[in-house]
Image 1 (cartoon, rainbow, N blue to C red):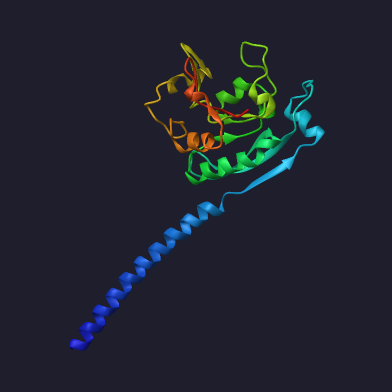
Image 2 (cartoon, rainbow, N blue to C red):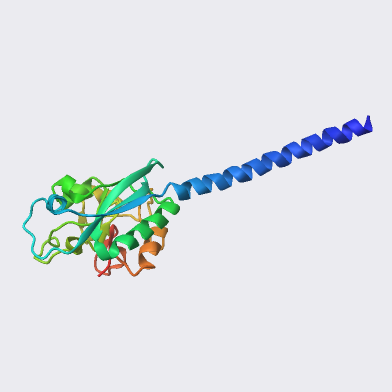
Length: 220
């Protein structure tokens, strides 16, 4: 009888240890799946594709650009593939940044080249689209934007609007002026998105003194 009791106790303990071991293994597997799911491509851009990305605008001395396709986590927690058009010198660095953003599971709604919006920055922002290259001038000036050189990236612009006094762009992002009212996809000071860009020498519009451009990251 005593032997049977010891045997029964051994079976219970072994079963518990096995379950705990399985949970640990499953945890490790899940972590590896997140890592494994990040994929990317860097591709050259043909003259025809370049014309499309510029929306057939006449451009002089355009810099060499590359297409960077990266995995990202959308607002529903699902893995998607997006595309950014960036300066060729920054392509590998952009992959590294978005790999780390993927690891920390910061959500991005969508990531589509600007030509899908007829190169209209307002339409892209209103749709909360993350984008990079856009051959255009800075709003209200004749100066070419950093986006014209593929050296700037706007992330979730609806949730992270440009703010200067009473002006908000996009206009439908006005309710996100209050940065204390946090929602998923909103960029905050010292979060993983800001840290990953800054650690590689990029600057953030959220640090500007007289205006705030929470969506905007750039590197000269």
